[in-house]
Image (cartoon, rainbow, N blue to C red):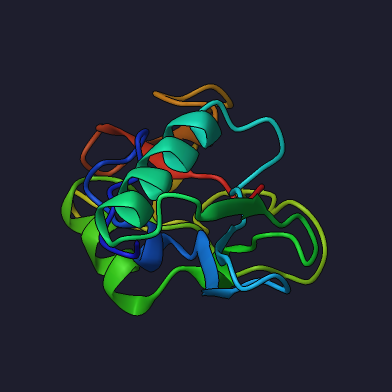
Length: 151
């Protein structure tokens, strides 16, 4: 389950992204996989659910279930260190650590550029390549780059 690629960010697995929660038997003995979306309304949820169900069936659990868990909500703290390295290696600025209960506001210089490492960055657009990304701009190397948003 954890190795399944995220449909919107195929460079990172669902495990490293922190989307896959528990995997085990439910109250009735049927295998359940809990997934927590990175934000409400994520358009990738049907694709993630279908991929997890395919893995369950391939492992001998065709009646397995996928449950979406919204509480506690996903935060950037769930991304593994390897996941953060993977995002940065593919030009996506890893999100800032969660601050305790709400969206992370991107301040000037808060996010390092994945291209040159400079902190001379600023918000460029709240809309990025997918709904869970924004676009930042590096004033040092003058390159735009996607930034995975916290919620």
